[in-house]
Image 1 (tube, rainbow, N blue to C red):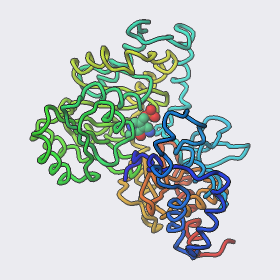
Image 2: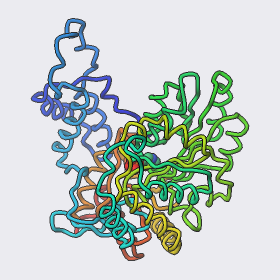
Image 3: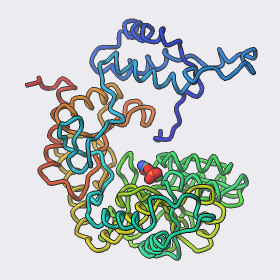
Image 4: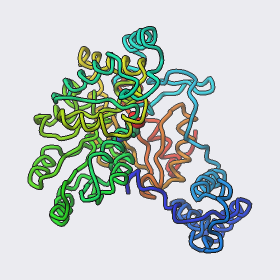
Length: 471
Ligand code: PMP
């Protein structure tokens, strides 16, 4: 299951809030599942009992009677469910933690210092003086906003400079920048594909890819993660039924930390006459000896990939997204993609800082080398410590799989208490028993910080598993 597998709360309806807590408690007692190693089953039992099939209450006579309260929405029941589970198992909410200042390899929250492995700032550029200076100068010259879409309010030199630099960086004809990475995927896929087309995507592809596919109304089919045989089966069965076909993968998967097999994907896309789109959100500055991403890593001609997509929010330490490729592709997006035509252009400080960041990536390739060494070190130490790192390949993202969501919640609290900020990913984002901690490694982490993180993770996992007694 991917992190996009939209909640099945859509198909269910909430219990009254007052009933929720008592139902949860009764379920725990009744199922008698609280014995060690049964926590996951408890979570599942609770998830099942605290919602009812939506159809039961969505009766015909309810229609047309007003929209009711927001708290009646199934989404709200899902949120309540997680909160109640948290209370029941005395687990704090690991999400929306508030940081006091800039989050680097260390961060401060409520006045306390933490070791930080929860930032996508892969090359540590969020505190680079060149970015701050570029942003400052852009504000002085252009202000903080361009106020409307570039198609009507016009663009600024920095938009053009950034896009030229991105196209050069990828070795393709042109690029265009959007204000959001998520919107880049939604709008690009939604604009290019239509009802008569086929989209085949890796099951772990980002939510924005799925939403783009939905918007396009194309036939959208997932294939098993990184399984080329499964991809070919889908193409064999469906390609001929559709006009155009698009294969969408991520260069480096953010849930598992593994790479898409680009050379084989290129062969398949050429064999079946499909376009290939690669989401490089987590590969810019990460893969390849100079950080140019998947093409450099695999030594392929970047022009063989039809659509390069990426975000400005990770290595480039700002906010926004981009598409790079052929000139016609970029023209279509500039005149048709809703996220460009109907949404404001990149704000001057962000565009200027992203451009400065790209220049730093080019000028300081030693950051990429350090990042890659740190990723390998983390993976090696984690494996040596017996942690389950799944398919992680040791490039900036290493997932440590711990089991069920309740266990992950408990661990999350304990890790925080030990001064380690790393975020859990739980069901339904990942399968019920495959909750994990995603460690985001940067070029700025020191070997000592990496050693500490692995040691703390190992120790706390043992404590939660009851293998050792707390000191
Ligand atoms: N694609 C992938 C693979 C991502 O991981 C993300 C965000 N984490 C996005 C797209 C969206 O990017 P942004 O957060 O910059 O909007």
